[in-house]
Image (cartoon, rainbow, N blue to C red; front, top):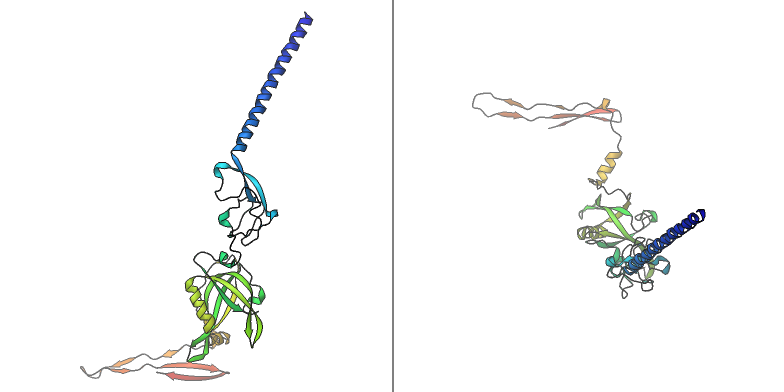
Length: 291
């Protein structure tokens, strides 16, 4: 009896093992089938494995091939990294982003990359600078600056200079050098290229030719524009004069207008008002009368 029971237990265990094996086999087969099906629904796409900035010449270390859903496959993407190596990025690429033809500089255009950085609707305007105007050489691409012009009030009043901030929060596209001829000798001149609107480019051209411009660096995160009245020599000097203490100031005395009528119907006589101003200079007091 015990022998039959043991034999039955062995047979039952064998059956359980067989069922489990068949279940595992079917599960693994189904998993392989799903994986194979998913593989058939994806395609290899060349992607950026690191962030690639605008204007960068792409090398093989920056590109990899990743599986991409076939139904989401970009129409102008690359299936391998070979065609991408050596191309120039016309836009920024983030890590994991597919490399597409529309964001690369055309193969027949390898120069004039500055135009790629000019924002839509803006213009690139290059101005000459020196170490002072260029803020000691600290102005670099992507800096933000204000532009101040110092010029004469009018052609007849050349001695009267006025300074005014007329452009604010301007993007610096490039900073470099150009070679010019001066006294029949080549001279290196520092330049800064700014991104401005068409209206601003006209103002900047006039300011560059008619006066002296100064670049003022500002915090990159500070985009607030501040209205300023400008400054002239009179305002500059008056701001430097010492203020008279309030205890030394005497209120201005004014005489009221007196109207007299002598006889009914006679013309009205008006006495002009006069003002007395007390002036304190070098400890001496004096009075001035004004009508």
